[in-house]
Length: 156
Image 1 (cartoon, one colour):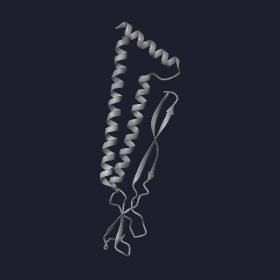
Image 2 (image 1 turned 30 degrees about the vertical axis):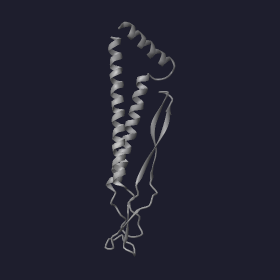
Image 3 (image 1 turned 90 degrees about the vertical axis):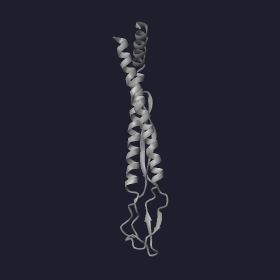
Image 4 (image 1 turned 180 degrees about the vertical axis):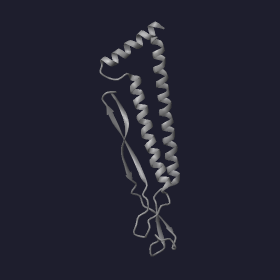
């Protein structure tokens, strides 16, 4: 038991001497950056679903346009690791859905109304994937915290 604590303390000091963070702190940063990114992804998906039926007010006005979130890897020098960051949120340039609704105020001269390019099935799949990724990162963070507590126990 004492040998394990001695080895762990040496590992911690070695990582500090190398001017990088404790590997468990780096693991926590990675998990948190993943959770933050997936949280933002869920917000974008929720916005898309909420606006899936929002048309223009007249035939010349475009309806809501689906948003897509893009991620990038960002090198964190202090942690000596790569974190997930949001690169941008852009509008999907795919075609709008056309529905024949001649009585609608946004109908063109042929009776067609432009509806958002939001597919609720795709949005629900994106939401499920983001939720699963968030949960995986949360589980990783919990394991990291548990390991940090075990190290502290060994050092007592």
